[in-house]
Image (cartoon, rainbow, N blue to C red; front, side, top):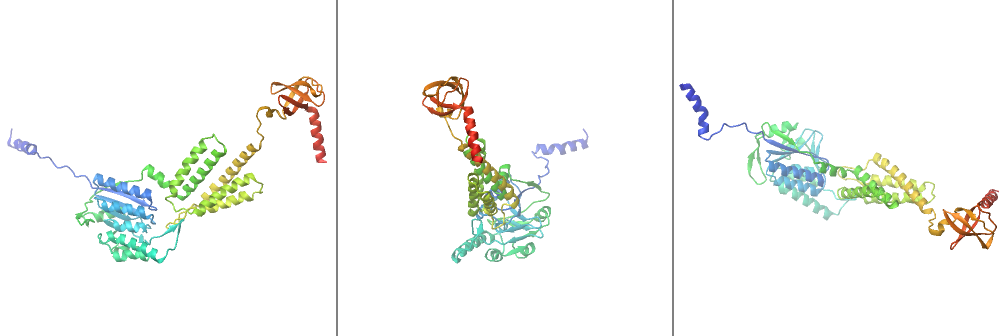
Length: 454
Protein backbone atom coordinates (compact mmCIF):
# COMPACT_ATOMS: atom_id res chain seq x y z
CA UNK A 1 0.00 0.00 0.00
CA UNK A 2 1.43 3.37 -0.97
CA UNK A 3 1.91 6.34 1.29
CA UNK A 4 -0.96 8.27 -0.26
CA UNK A 5 -3.33 5.35 0.22
CA UNK A 6 -2.35 5.02 3.89
CA UNK A 7 -3.07 8.71 4.45
CA UNK A 8 -6.48 8.41 2.81
CA UNK A 9 -7.43 5.41 4.91
CA UNK A 10 -6.30 7.19 8.06
CA UNK A 11 -8.40 10.27 7.23
CA UNK A 12 -11.59 8.24 6.82
CA UNK A 13 -11.05 5.80 9.69
CA UNK A 14 -9.79 8.22 12.36
CA UNK A 15 -13.22 9.68 13.12
CA UNK A 16 -14.61 6.18 13.54
CA UNK A 17 -11.80 5.15 15.90
CA UNK A 18 -12.25 8.25 18.02
CA UNK A 19 -16.06 7.87 18.06
CA UNK A 20 -16.62 11.05 16.09
CA UNK A 21 -19.22 11.61 13.38
CA UNK A 22 -19.39 13.90 10.43
CA UNK A 23 -21.71 16.83 11.31
CA UNK A 24 -25.06 16.90 9.43
CA UNK A 25 -26.96 19.97 8.25
CA UNK A 26 -28.93 21.56 11.10
CA UNK A 27 -32.74 21.45 10.87
CA UNK A 28 -34.31 24.83 10.03
CA UNK A 29 -36.00 26.71 12.90
CA UNK A 30 -39.75 26.17 13.03
CA UNK A 31 -42.23 29.02 13.30
CA UNK A 32 -45.81 28.09 14.30
CA UNK A 33 -48.33 30.57 12.88
CA UNK A 34 -51.80 31.04 14.43
CA UNK A 35 -54.50 33.43 13.26
CA UNK A 36 -56.96 35.54 15.20
CA UNK A 37 -59.42 36.71 12.57
CA UNK A 38 -62.69 37.97 14.01
CA UNK A 39 -64.11 38.34 17.48
CA UNK A 40 -62.21 36.88 20.40
CA UNK A 41 -64.55 34.34 22.01
CA UNK A 42 -64.15 30.98 23.80
CA UNK A 43 -63.71 28.90 20.62
CA UNK A 44 -61.02 31.29 19.34
CA UNK A 45 -59.31 31.24 22.74
CA UNK A 46 -59.29 27.43 22.74
CA UNK A 47 -57.73 27.37 19.26
CA UNK A 48 -54.94 29.82 20.22
CA UNK A 49 -54.26 28.09 23.54
CA UNK A 50 -54.01 24.68 21.87
CA UNK A 51 -51.64 26.08 19.26
CA UNK A 52 -49.36 27.63 21.87
CA UNK A 53 -49.29 24.41 23.89
CA UNK A 54 -48.44 22.34 20.79
CA UNK A 55 -45.64 24.73 19.81
CA UNK A 56 -44.14 24.43 23.29
CA UNK A 57 -44.27 20.64 23.17
CA UNK A 58 -42.59 20.52 19.77
CA UNK A 59 -39.87 23.03 20.65
CA UNK A 60 -40.67 25.69 18.03
CA UNK A 61 -38.36 28.69 17.66
CA UNK A 62 -41.22 31.23 17.55
CA UNK A 63 -45.00 31.42 17.80
CA UNK A 64 -46.42 33.97 15.36
CA UNK A 65 -50.01 35.14 15.95
CA UNK A 66 -51.34 37.07 12.96
CA UNK A 67 -54.23 39.20 14.16
CA UNK A 68 -57.14 41.21 12.79
CA UNK A 69 -59.82 41.64 15.43
CA UNK A 70 -62.37 44.20 16.64
CA UNK A 71 -62.05 42.80 20.17
CA UNK A 72 -64.12 40.32 22.10
CA UNK A 73 -64.82 38.83 25.49
CA UNK A 74 -62.67 39.77 28.48
CA UNK A 75 -62.49 36.20 29.78
CA UNK A 76 -61.28 34.82 26.43
CA UNK A 77 -58.74 37.64 26.11
CA UNK A 78 -57.27 36.94 29.54
CA UNK A 79 -57.06 33.23 28.78
CA UNK A 80 -55.00 33.91 25.64
CA UNK A 81 -52.74 36.40 27.43
CA UNK A 82 -52.09 33.91 30.23
CA UNK A 83 -50.94 31.31 27.69
CA UNK A 84 -48.70 33.87 25.97
CA UNK A 85 -47.08 34.82 29.28
CA UNK A 86 -46.60 31.19 30.34
CA UNK A 87 -45.17 30.10 26.96
CA UNK A 88 -41.54 28.95 27.01
CA UNK A 89 -41.41 29.74 23.28
CA UNK A 90 -41.25 33.46 22.36
CA UNK A 91 -44.51 34.84 20.98
CA UNK A 92 -44.82 37.53 18.31
CA UNK A 93 -48.18 39.16 17.59
CA UNK A 94 -48.42 40.65 14.10
CA UNK A 95 -51.34 42.94 13.14
CA UNK A 96 -51.71 42.14 9.46
CA UNK A 97 -52.48 42.38 6.59
CA UNK A 98 -52.81 46.08 5.74
CA UNK A 99 -56.17 47.42 6.84
CA UNK A 100 -56.30 45.16 9.88
CA UNK A 101 -56.74 46.28 13.47
CA UNK A 102 -56.03 45.18 17.00
CA UNK A 103 -58.86 46.91 18.80
CA UNK A 104 -60.12 46.49 22.35
CA UNK A 105 -59.14 42.99 23.55
CA UNK A 106 -56.76 42.67 20.60
CA UNK A 107 -54.77 45.66 21.90
CA UNK A 108 -54.24 43.91 25.24
CA UNK A 109 -53.01 40.78 23.44
CA UNK A 110 -50.66 42.82 21.22
CA UNK A 111 -48.92 44.38 24.22
CA UNK A 112 -48.62 41.01 25.98
CA UNK A 113 -46.41 39.51 23.24
CA UNK A 114 -42.62 39.26 23.36
CA UNK A 115 -42.61 41.00 19.96
CA UNK A 116 -45.41 43.39 18.94
CA UNK A 117 -45.43 43.97 15.18
CA UNK A 118 -47.74 45.80 12.80
CA UNK A 119 -48.11 45.96 9.04
CA UNK A 120 -48.40 49.29 7.19
CA UNK A 121 -51.89 50.86 7.20
CA UNK A 122 -53.00 49.08 10.38
CA UNK A 123 -54.05 50.45 13.75
CA UNK A 124 -54.48 49.40 17.37
CA UNK A 125 -56.11 50.70 20.53
CA UNK A 126 -59.67 51.77 21.39
CA UNK A 127 -59.58 49.43 24.37
CA UNK A 128 -62.16 51.04 26.66
CA UNK A 129 -64.14 48.27 28.40
CA UNK A 130 -67.78 48.06 27.38
CA UNK A 131 -70.59 46.94 29.66
CA UNK A 132 -73.27 45.30 27.54
CA UNK A 133 -76.73 44.07 28.50
CA UNK A 134 -78.92 42.44 25.89
CA UNK A 135 -76.37 43.18 23.21
CA UNK A 136 -76.27 46.93 23.76
CA UNK A 137 -73.72 48.99 25.66
CA UNK A 138 -75.21 50.66 28.72
CA UNK A 139 -74.28 53.58 30.92
CA UNK A 140 -73.06 52.82 34.43
CA UNK A 141 -72.59 55.10 37.41
CA UNK A 142 -69.26 56.82 38.04
CA UNK A 143 -68.15 54.41 40.76
CA UNK A 144 -68.73 51.35 38.60
CA UNK A 145 -67.06 53.05 35.64
CA UNK A 146 -63.94 53.83 37.70
CA UNK A 147 -63.89 50.28 39.01
CA UNK A 148 -63.94 48.81 35.49
CA UNK A 149 -61.32 51.23 34.14
CA UNK A 150 -59.00 50.76 37.11
CA UNK A 151 -59.20 46.99 36.80
CA UNK A 152 -58.41 47.13 33.07
CA UNK A 153 -55.48 49.56 33.44
CA UNK A 154 -53.98 47.62 36.35
CA UNK A 155 -54.18 44.41 34.33
CA UNK A 156 -52.44 46.10 31.39
CA UNK A 157 -49.69 47.52 33.61
CA UNK A 158 -49.07 44.10 35.21
CA UNK A 159 -47.35 42.83 32.06
CA UNK A 160 -46.86 45.82 29.71
CA UNK A 161 -44.21 47.43 31.95
CA UNK A 162 -42.20 44.22 32.01
CA UNK A 163 -42.41 44.06 28.22
CA UNK A 164 -40.87 47.54 27.99
CA UNK A 165 -44.00 49.19 26.60
CA UNK A 166 -45.02 52.80 27.10
CA UNK A 167 -47.61 52.16 29.78
CA UNK A 168 -48.73 55.78 30.15
CA UNK A 169 -49.58 55.98 26.45
CA UNK A 170 -51.14 52.50 26.45
CA UNK A 171 -53.47 53.47 29.29
CA UNK A 172 -54.98 56.24 27.15
CA UNK A 173 -56.40 53.51 24.89
CA UNK A 174 -58.42 52.41 27.92
CA UNK A 175 -59.24 55.68 29.64
CA UNK A 176 -59.73 57.82 26.51
CA UNK A 177 -60.38 55.10 23.88
CA UNK A 178 -57.32 56.30 21.95
CA UNK A 179 -56.23 54.42 18.82
CA UNK A 180 -52.82 54.46 17.13
CA UNK A 181 -51.57 53.92 13.60
CA UNK A 182 -48.62 51.58 13.12
CA UNK A 183 -46.16 54.52 13.01
CA UNK A 184 -47.67 56.16 16.09
CA UNK A 185 -47.48 52.84 17.92
CA UNK A 186 -43.81 52.40 16.90
CA UNK A 187 -42.87 55.95 17.90
CA UNK A 188 -44.75 55.56 21.20
CA UNK A 189 -43.08 52.23 22.06
CA UNK A 190 -46.32 50.29 21.79
CA UNK A 191 -44.99 48.04 19.04
CA UNK A 192 -41.47 46.89 18.20
CA UNK A 193 -41.35 46.65 14.44
CA UNK A 194 -43.26 47.51 11.26
CA UNK A 195 -43.08 44.77 8.63
CA UNK A 196 -44.68 44.63 5.19
CA UNK A 197 -45.16 40.85 5.20
CA UNK A 198 -44.62 37.72 7.25
CA UNK A 199 -41.33 37.02 5.47
CA UNK A 200 -40.17 40.59 6.08
CA UNK A 201 -41.06 40.27 9.76
CA UNK A 202 -39.17 37.00 10.25
CA UNK A 203 -36.14 38.44 8.47
CA UNK A 204 -36.18 41.48 10.78
CA UNK A 205 -36.51 39.29 13.87
CA UNK A 206 -33.62 36.95 12.97
CA UNK A 207 -30.85 37.54 15.49
CA UNK A 208 -32.92 40.03 17.50
CA UNK A 209 -32.32 39.93 21.27
CA UNK A 210 -35.45 39.72 23.45
CA UNK A 211 -36.08 39.76 27.18
CA UNK A 212 -38.70 37.32 28.42
CA UNK A 213 -41.21 38.23 31.09
CA UNK A 214 -39.16 36.36 33.70
CA UNK A 215 -36.16 38.62 32.98
CA UNK A 216 -34.08 36.10 31.01
CA UNK A 217 -32.54 37.30 27.74
CA UNK A 218 -32.32 35.28 24.54
CA UNK A 219 -31.70 35.82 20.86
CA UNK A 220 -34.07 34.76 18.10
CA UNK A 221 -32.60 32.44 15.47
CA UNK A 222 -34.87 32.51 12.45
CA UNK A 223 -32.59 32.02 9.45
CA UNK A 224 -34.51 30.24 6.66
CA UNK A 225 -37.38 29.21 8.98
CA UNK A 226 -39.96 26.53 8.33
CA UNK A 227 -43.37 28.16 8.84
CA UNK A 228 -46.13 25.80 10.01
CA UNK A 229 -49.67 27.12 9.61
CA UNK A 230 -51.97 25.82 12.32
CA UNK A 231 -55.67 26.06 11.47
CA UNK A 232 -58.74 25.40 13.56
CA UNK A 233 -59.77 21.78 13.92
CA UNK A 234 -63.03 20.69 12.22
CA UNK A 235 -64.71 20.73 15.64
CA UNK A 236 -63.53 24.27 16.35
CA UNK A 237 -64.60 25.47 12.90
CA UNK A 238 -68.02 23.92 13.46
CA UNK A 239 -68.43 25.58 16.87
CA UNK A 240 -67.13 28.90 15.54
CA UNK A 241 -69.73 28.73 12.77
CA UNK A 242 -72.56 28.17 15.22
CA UNK A 243 -71.87 31.44 17.01
CA UNK A 244 -72.40 33.40 13.78
CA UNK A 245 -75.65 35.40 14.14
CA UNK A 246 -77.21 34.17 10.87
CA UNK A 247 -76.63 30.50 11.61
CA UNK A 248 -77.76 30.95 15.22
CA UNK A 249 -81.08 32.42 14.04
CA UNK A 250 -81.62 29.57 11.57
CA UNK A 251 -80.80 26.94 14.21
CA UNK A 252 -83.26 28.59 16.59
CA UNK A 253 -86.08 28.45 14.01
CA UNK A 254 -85.25 24.88 12.97
CA UNK A 255 -85.35 23.84 16.64
CA UNK A 256 -88.70 25.51 17.27
CA UNK A 257 -90.31 24.19 14.06
CA UNK A 258 -88.94 20.67 14.57
CA UNK A 259 -90.34 20.39 18.10
CA UNK A 260 -93.60 22.03 16.98
CA UNK A 261 -94.06 19.43 14.22
CA UNK A 262 -93.29 16.58 16.63
CA UNK A 263 -95.78 17.83 19.24
CA UNK A 264 -98.55 18.37 16.67
CA UNK A 265 -97.85 15.12 14.79
CA UNK A 266 -96.61 12.63 17.42
CA UNK A 267 -94.71 9.64 16.17
CA UNK A 268 -92.83 11.24 13.27
CA UNK A 269 -89.65 11.15 15.44
CA UNK A 270 -87.29 12.72 12.85
CA UNK A 271 -88.56 16.32 13.25
CA UNK A 272 -88.30 16.00 17.02
CA UNK A 273 -84.73 14.68 16.88
CA UNK A 274 -83.58 17.36 14.40
CA UNK A 275 -85.38 20.09 16.33
CA UNK A 276 -83.90 19.04 19.68
CA UNK A 277 -80.35 18.97 18.28
CA UNK A 278 -80.76 22.35 16.56
CA UNK A 279 -82.23 23.92 19.70
CA UNK A 280 -79.38 22.62 21.88
CA UNK A 281 -76.82 24.04 19.44
CA UNK A 282 -78.68 27.36 19.49
CA UNK A 283 -78.60 27.35 23.30
CA UNK A 284 -74.83 26.74 23.15
CA UNK A 285 -74.45 29.82 20.94
CA UNK A 286 -76.70 31.91 23.19
CA UNK A 287 -74.21 32.01 26.05
CA UNK A 288 -71.49 33.26 23.67
CA UNK A 289 -73.46 35.81 21.64
CA UNK A 290 -74.80 39.14 22.91
CA UNK A 291 -78.49 38.17 22.82
CA UNK A 292 -81.22 40.79 23.04
CA UNK A 293 -84.14 39.39 25.07
CA UNK A 294 -86.58 41.67 23.24
CA UNK A 295 -85.69 39.89 20.03
CA UNK A 296 -86.36 36.51 21.63
CA UNK A 297 -89.74 37.66 22.95
CA UNK A 298 -90.72 39.01 19.51
CA UNK A 299 -89.88 35.66 17.88
CA UNK A 300 -91.96 33.83 20.51
CA UNK A 301 -94.84 36.28 19.87
CA UNK A 302 -94.55 35.63 16.13
CA UNK A 303 -94.92 31.86 16.62
CA UNK A 304 -97.99 32.44 18.81
CA UNK A 305 -99.55 34.72 16.17
CA UNK A 306 -98.98 32.09 13.47
CA UNK A 307 -100.84 29.54 15.60
CA UNK A 308 -103.72 31.95 16.24
CA UNK A 309 -103.93 32.69 12.51
CA UNK A 310 -104.58 28.99 11.90
CA UNK A 311 -107.24 28.79 14.64
CA UNK A 312 -109.21 31.99 14.08
CA UNK A 313 -110.46 33.88 11.05
CA UNK A 314 -108.49 37.13 11.05
CA UNK A 315 -108.30 37.65 7.26
CA UNK A 316 -104.49 37.50 7.48
CA UNK A 317 -104.07 40.15 10.18
CA UNK A 318 -102.57 37.73 12.71
CA UNK A 319 -100.33 36.14 10.08
CA UNK A 320 -99.00 39.50 8.88
CA UNK A 321 -98.47 40.55 12.49
CA UNK A 322 -96.48 37.36 13.07
CA UNK A 323 -94.26 38.01 10.04
CA UNK A 324 -93.56 41.57 11.18
CA UNK A 325 -92.84 40.42 14.75
CA UNK A 326 -90.44 37.71 13.56
CA UNK A 327 -88.61 40.08 11.22
CA UNK A 328 -88.15 42.65 13.98
CA UNK A 329 -87.12 39.92 16.41
CA UNK A 330 -84.53 38.56 13.97
CA UNK A 331 -83.01 41.99 13.36
CA UNK A 332 -82.90 42.72 17.10
CA UNK A 333 -81.88 39.23 18.21
CA UNK A 334 -78.09 39.70 18.09
CA UNK A 335 -76.25 43.01 18.30
CA UNK A 336 -72.57 43.11 19.21
CA UNK A 337 -71.49 46.49 20.61
CA UNK A 338 -67.97 45.76 19.30
CA UNK A 339 -68.57 44.70 15.71
CA UNK A 340 -72.23 45.45 15.01
CA UNK A 341 -72.68 41.79 14.03
CA UNK A 342 -76.34 40.91 13.58
CA UNK A 343 -78.76 38.76 11.61
CA UNK A 344 -78.80 40.02 8.03
CA UNK A 345 -82.05 41.21 6.45
CA UNK A 346 -81.80 38.62 3.69
CA UNK A 347 -81.52 35.74 6.14
CA UNK A 348 -84.33 37.18 8.28
CA UNK A 349 -86.70 37.37 5.29
CA UNK A 350 -85.62 34.03 3.85
CA UNK A 351 -86.28 32.23 7.14
CA UNK A 352 -89.36 34.10 8.35
CA UNK A 353 -91.70 33.54 5.39
CA UNK A 354 -91.23 29.72 5.20
CA UNK A 355 -91.53 29.51 8.98
CA UNK A 356 -94.85 31.38 8.88
CA UNK A 357 -96.20 29.15 6.09
CA UNK A 358 -95.16 25.93 7.82
CA UNK A 359 -96.57 26.94 11.20
CA UNK A 360 -99.94 28.07 9.80
CA UNK A 361 -100.40 25.04 7.50
CA UNK A 362 -99.45 22.55 10.21
CA UNK A 363 -101.77 24.13 12.75
CA UNK A 364 -104.67 24.09 10.31
CA UNK A 365 -104.09 20.41 9.64
CA UNK A 366 -104.12 19.74 13.37
CA UNK A 367 -107.33 21.73 13.90
CA UNK A 368 -109.00 19.96 10.97
CA UNK A 369 -108.08 16.53 12.31
CA UNK A 370 -109.40 17.42 15.76
CA UNK A 371 -112.67 18.88 14.45
CA UNK A 372 -113.86 15.49 13.12
CA UNK A 373 -116.16 13.41 15.30
CA UNK A 374 -114.40 10.50 16.94
CA UNK A 375 -116.66 7.47 17.09
CA UNK A 376 -115.99 3.97 18.34
CA UNK A 377 -118.08 0.87 19.02
CA UNK A 378 -121.77 1.05 18.15
CA UNK A 379 -121.56 4.84 17.75
CA UNK A 380 -119.54 4.16 14.62
CA UNK A 381 -122.75 2.87 13.00
CA UNK A 382 -124.52 6.25 13.12
CA UNK A 383 -125.25 7.64 9.63
CA UNK A 384 -123.83 4.49 8.06
CA UNK A 385 -125.56 2.81 5.11
CA UNK A 386 -126.77 -0.81 5.18
CA UNK A 387 -129.07 -3.20 3.31
CA UNK A 388 -132.26 -4.86 4.60
CA UNK A 389 -131.87 -8.65 4.62
CA UNK A 390 -135.16 -9.48 6.38
CA UNK A 391 -138.10 -7.19 5.59
CA UNK A 392 -139.17 -4.73 8.28
CA UNK A 393 -142.97 -4.56 8.75
CA UNK A 394 -142.86 -1.21 10.54
CA UNK A 395 -143.44 -0.18 14.13
CA UNK A 396 -141.33 -0.56 17.23
CA UNK A 397 -142.21 -4.22 17.78
CA UNK A 398 -141.95 -5.35 14.15
CA UNK A 399 -138.23 -5.94 13.69
CA UNK A 400 -136.30 -7.02 10.65
CA UNK A 401 -132.63 -7.54 9.90
CA UNK A 402 -130.09 -5.27 8.19
CA UNK A 403 -126.47 -5.79 7.16
CA UNK A 404 -124.11 -2.93 8.13
CA UNK A 405 -120.29 -3.16 7.94
CA UNK A 406 -120.65 -6.83 7.06
CA UNK A 407 -122.60 -7.53 10.28
CA UNK A 408 -126.28 -8.48 10.79
CA UNK A 409 -128.29 -6.29 13.18
CA UNK A 410 -131.90 -6.27 14.30
CA UNK A 411 -133.61 -3.17 12.99
CA UNK A 412 -136.84 -1.24 13.34
CA UNK A 413 -138.38 1.50 11.27
CA UNK A 414 -141.38 3.82 11.31
CA UNK A 415 -142.68 2.37 8.06
CA UNK A 416 -142.38 -0.93 6.24
CA UNK A 417 -139.15 -1.55 4.33
CA UNK A 418 -138.80 -4.33 1.77
CA UNK A 419 -135.91 -6.77 1.63
CA UNK A 420 -132.88 -5.44 -0.35
CA UNK A 421 -133.69 -1.75 0.29
CA UNK A 422 -130.67 0.49 1.13
CA UNK A 423 -131.18 2.16 4.51
CA UNK A 424 -129.31 4.61 6.72
CA UNK A 425 -128.82 4.11 10.46
CA UNK A 426 -130.53 6.91 12.40
CA UNK A 427 -130.14 5.73 15.98
CA UNK A 428 -128.60 2.89 18.00
CA UNK A 429 -130.59 1.54 20.93
CA UNK A 430 -128.54 -1.19 22.56
CA UNK A 431 -128.24 -3.88 19.89
CA UNK A 432 -131.19 -2.62 17.82
CA UNK A 433 -130.80 -0.14 14.99
CA UNK A 434 -133.44 2.42 13.99
CA UNK A 435 -133.22 2.85 10.23
CA UNK A 436 -134.91 4.67 7.38
CA UNK A 437 -134.90 4.10 3.61
CA UNK A 438 -131.98 5.86 1.96
CA UNK A 439 -134.07 7.06 -0.97
CA UNK A 440 -136.63 8.71 1.28
CA UNK A 441 -133.88 10.44 3.24
CA UNK A 442 -132.31 11.70 0.02
CA UNK A 443 -135.66 13.22 -1.08
CA UNK A 444 -136.11 14.83 2.32
CA UNK A 445 -132.54 16.23 2.28
CA UNK A 446 -133.04 17.65 -1.22
CA UNK A 447 -136.31 19.22 -0.12
CA UNK A 448 -134.64 20.84 2.91
CA UNK A 449 -131.84 22.24 0.78
CA UNK A 450 -134.34 23.57 -1.78
CA UNK A 451 -136.30 25.32 0.97
CA UNK A 452 -133.06 26.81 2.36
CA UNK A 453 -132.18 28.21 -1.08
CA UNK A 454 -135.65 29.71 -1.48
